[in-house]
Image (cartoon, rainbow, N blue to C red; front, side, top):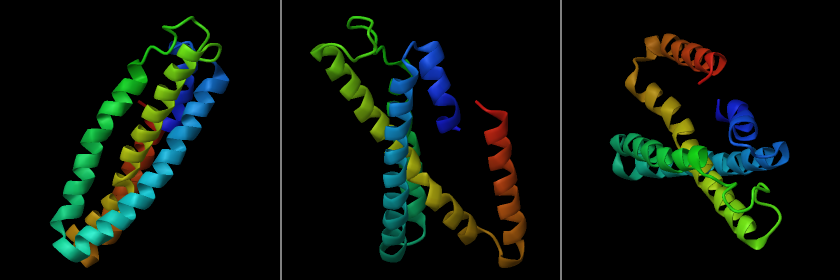
Length: 149
């Protein structure tokens, strides 16, 4: 959902150029890919060494911590320097660099939860009910994507 709507929000509502907003989405996606990889490896490690309770705690903490850089990303005033969308001078380039790092962190923290949700759902449902549980998960996940923020 973030990849679909964040580009429009940054370019339309926050006054960023379309190219700059697309760069931010690209960096967010790179962070998200790294977060998915780290979440899968980290949850496997936690599950095998500490038990089934810790991957869920890891996922929950990452989701809560991911709210802060995302909030900062949505409310950051990158046009405060000279109104040139963070491209023309050194001060604005530093501002754009901070925005890129925050986008990377937000993507990383939001990506951690992806692989953990499905493995947790598999661990908490009975074998004869897993098909229905995953069907409901996919239905509500797709419904939320279509409905939008």
